[in-house]
Length: 198
Ligand code: ZN
Image 1 (cartoon, rainbow, N blue to C red):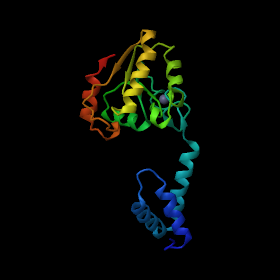
Image 2 (cartoon, protein in one colour; image 1 turned 120 degrees about the vertical axis):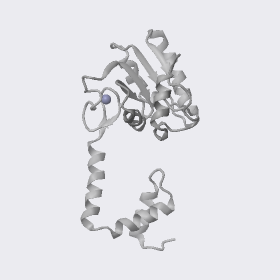
Image 3 (cartoon, rainbow, N blue to C red; image 1 turned 90 degrees about the vertical axis):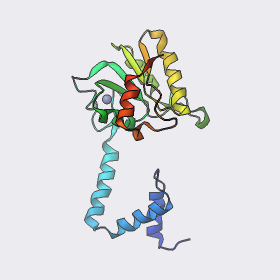
Image 4 (cartoon, rainbow, N blue to C red; image 1 turned 45 degrees about the horizontal axis):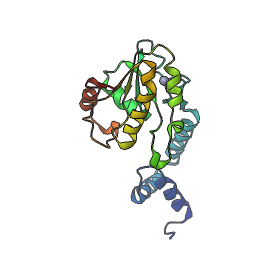
């Protein structure tokens, strides 16, 4: 039912298609936006468009960045022999916030989920295996402790084992099914320090 006129309804529909935005939030945002100064709305729209157009995947670690090589991979101080495998750029950000990890990352951009039809070929695994041809000493698997995260961790460890590279898994203590980004820094650090070799 179209209570608001088609323009506002269209805006509400678009907003409610975003993750985590339900119908009510979409309505609140839509009314907020139409009441904002036109200049501010233009700026918001342009920022979204620019971000979408300029952001790509880092050629080394596959995280989202606006450069060919992201700031972490291009930082000469980072230890490139230690690679932490995470599911998303948000997980990378969570570990970066702790300020205690000096290695580099590999962002899978997803996790294996037979239920959702996401197989090993649908995440950035091939890119990881290519990186392992270089000088790498340890791969720390820091996928989430959800079913998908555990499945992915197991799959990766089996792939890497034959190469002789050390593979470890962050300690559980991370709540089951919990997204890494919502876990506090202390828990993340404990999980990293308590990692176990697979
Ligand atoms: Zn990178």
